[in-house]
Length: 131
Image (cartoon, rainbow, N blue to C red):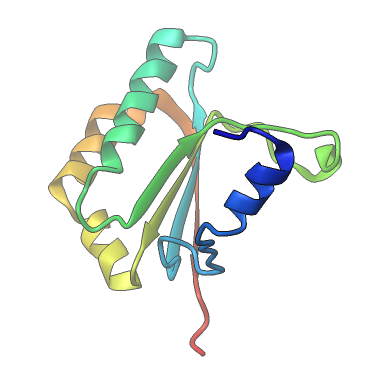
């Protein structure tokens, strides 16, 4: 079997190439929530909050979920909000699906069992404009 660069390029050019400009999840309705931990230096409390936030992403009406911590790059340092502890981005197919999530018993249980862990919460909802 040949291993030259030329042979590799020739072989690679015969392979199918699939590219898509469409995201794998249609991001019609976004529910973005920032959480500021009441005691950010408490690993026990921030770990509990993180695990609880991750568990919300398993609900069936959520198309996609992400839980993350702040990151600041040199490029946009002056305009980046990084004072929060966790950012949660939940993607829904519609505002109705988000409403279903908000009233879901597991979401209500999450609030009851974890509200003592945060000092501030900020919600940012956005919906793709109708075409």
